[in-house]
Image (tube, rainbow, N blue to C red; front, side):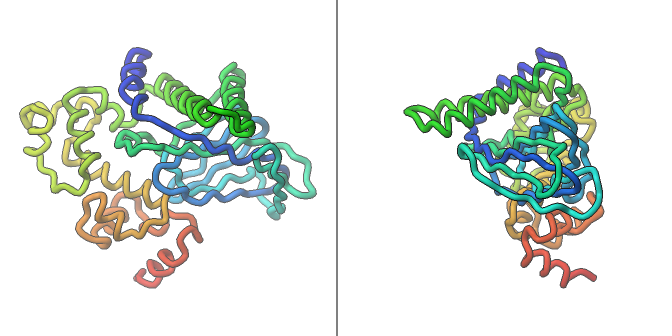
Amino acid sequence: MSDAGAAELLNAMVPLLRVRPVIEDFCRFGGSWESPHMPNGKGWAQFHIVTRGFCVVERPGLGELTLEAGDILLLPHGDSHVVRSRAVGVVRSISSDFRNGVRQRTTINGQADTELLCGRLLFETENPLVAALPDEIVIRTAGEPLLERFRHHLTDIRDELDWGKAGSEVIAADLARALFVMMLRDHLAENPAVDGTVSLLRDRTTARVVLAILNDLVRDWTLDDMAAVAVASRATLVRAFRKHAGTAPMTFLSDLRLAIARKRLAGTTEPIARIAEEVGYASEGALSKAIMRKYGVRPGALRLAGSDPAALAEEESEAP
């Protein structure tokens, strides 16, 4: 995406992105270790900044992701995941201590070779555009001044929250919003082959349809309905979708519903039946079959084992 294109998209998104920071952990790990992160619920994003060493991130239903010093990972949908060492062996215990409002986590009886700064961002307002963001945003800053810029931003946020002076929360929120926009800007500038939904948001005709669908997923949409929203003919709408996303409008609708369902499954502990209803499926069974066809796994497999024991146990008992 060109700088102008990224700027255009950001200008449309930024006024809707009000975020509040939660700086959680500063981690110093060594040897063989793992750190599970449960889903945070709707509206939460999670981030990890690797300031030293290497780590691997695992998420249900997706492949492994390796991060190294200078990498920043943003999970816009707060998916459950595990951050672990590249080394495989007996997992070391981790001690925790709070200092200046931030939890200090350290592996016991091992020399630290990896350091991470971890936290969350809370979207304070309902924003359908958030659902269009990709599952992960990775910023590679090794050898670039970007790493220090992000670290300075996070330090300023933490200091404002620790000081508790008048206006600190407002300043911290503004800094967190700026940090998030910086991540989005760098992601959009460095990744010309952006997510199809984001590409559609850059065209006025298709953007009307995408936003209408995101605001009313349960509606029984037809191509005629979409064309009416787009103020375009059916043929024009189909051409626009194929140009920007490489797919037909009805296929896009089906894929979007499944993508949002997957994100809700990985990022929340909501019952599968409720998620099915809210993304436009007639029943839990219909959603389960669609997820199996699309991702090759049952819905429960998209959650970390133990994140919702009752739901997982119920699904396992129903498995053939």
